[in-house]
Amino acid sequence: MVPRDADPRHAKLLVAITFWDFWIDSSNHDWLYYPGLTAGSWPPLARSVAADLSADRDITSEQVLRLVEPTSREPGRLESAIRALLEWDAAEQGDEADKA
Image (cartoon, rainbow, N blue to C red):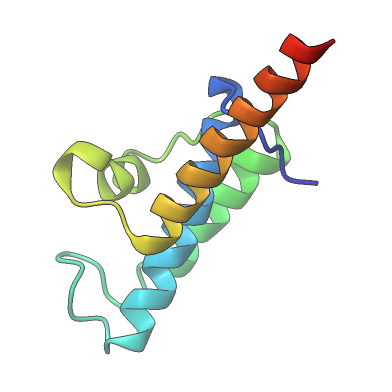
């Protein structure tokens, strides 16, 4: 179950989802738009991300973190949609708490 709130402790899930979105994008474009990453670069990074998630720790790969760092790029459509959903859900939860 994916958390639907904006709690910072769930940031690792956003990093992971963004990473996998970029990996898919890269494969769809013949590995052209992610400098320094080739087809063979992605699987070891994915294993690192999966290991961190399995251990319930923040993503530790510097390469993954640099790749998904929002200040170095425009957010992708998937990331923007996830962020909007989390913000909307947090607002909805706040509204319901106000009614109680």
